[in-house]
Length: 345
Image 1 (cartoon, rainbow, N blue to C red):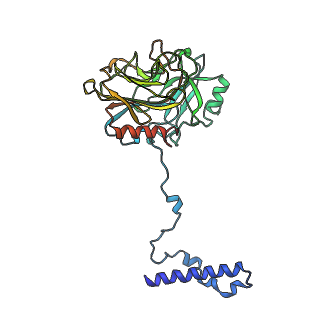
Image 2: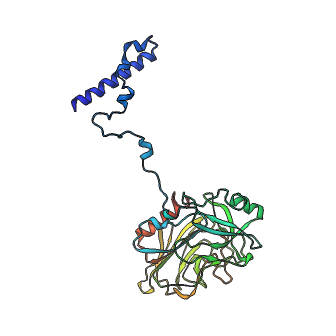
Image 3: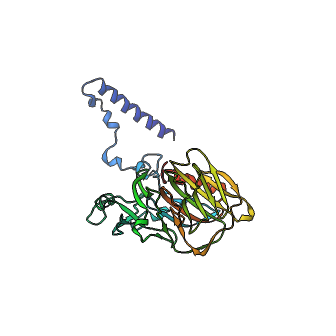
């Protein structure tokens, strides 16, 4: 080992000395025969003493690279991901492929198909030129005079949300959040996509990334059963978020309107009285939230309760879980929705 160290020190000293001489302008620097200390092409193929072969080969290429993580990659143990919907990103890394469909787009006002947003290997939506005519989704929608969401694909389960009536389709807003597209309702008109009937008992978790741009004086749902509950969203009160399974848990804070939020309704069975409204990873109110569930006669709706109430704003993703999340797990989900694999806000 001592010989190895001495050899390395001698080589470094010789190279440094030669560099100094060349820098100072000493003529015929090579006549000092410093180059004899350098290895020949044949010797370059030999392993360095004390190091295994290939120890220094392309270390940068072998360094760990950041990988995409969706809600389905977080190792959440207290709840199971049943469904995930988004026009902007995928539920888990295994779905980061152009074969994953995100949203069907129709021409606004006519329900004429324009194309299907797909995912990319990055985990986010593919916005390259793959729509009909080899144009980008943005270009196709611009030519069409605007696009609306006719189908909101369920990437995990079998409950896509659809809308057949052109006037009731949520609009697609390009560059809605972190330069990715999301569903949008620019007015207080009723816009909604809805799944087929679901059967799911409590406990359950509803989560979404959304913004209410304007409080139009009516209940504003991010997602909910066809009717009122289970649900997450805003109440009629300015800056008030809520969750419910029949009994509303609500919380008011400055900034709840006019900004994007990660909202989680952690709904336990009513008797336990420990359901929680979680905003930005913090449980802001807890208590009994009722016994409402999905009994097989209602679907999941997004942006409206199916009656006279509709969110005037934007929805970027929704997820639906069975189970009751502990604080560690809903903290993981919140971090993912906000983070570099999420919406980065």
